[in-house]
Every structure is written in C-alpha cells, then in structure tokens.
Amino acid sequence: MKKLTAEIVQLVKNEKGQGLVEYALILMLIAMVVIVALQLFGVKLNNTYENISSGVTSAGFK
Image (cartoon, rainbow, N blue to C red; front, side, top):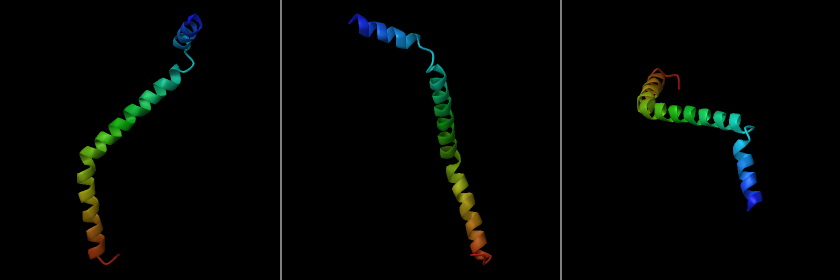
C-alpha cells in the first residue's frame, strides 16, 4: 500500500505531462469554439452556398 501511495505522489509531482495536458485543454477549447460557431452560422452559410449554387446552375455553368 505504501508503494502505491508513493507512486501516486510521484505522479502528482511529475510535471513532464503538464505541457501536454495544457495543449490538450487548449485544443479542446478551440474545438468547442469551432463547433459553437458552426452551429450558430451553419444555417446561414448553407443558405448562402445554396444561393450561389442555384445562381451558377441558372447561369448554365453546371
């Protein structure tokens, strides 16, 4: 039991993985912002692309 406790204490004190965790948290935050932005602007962008597509089709470029 003492060995397990010592290993847990060593893992908590170990700072090698700290940078990796920080980068992972930053990437997760960026991903969340992108998902929210796509949800907010997704419908509007879809309508814009559909208008462009129908305009290109009606002009005879398709």
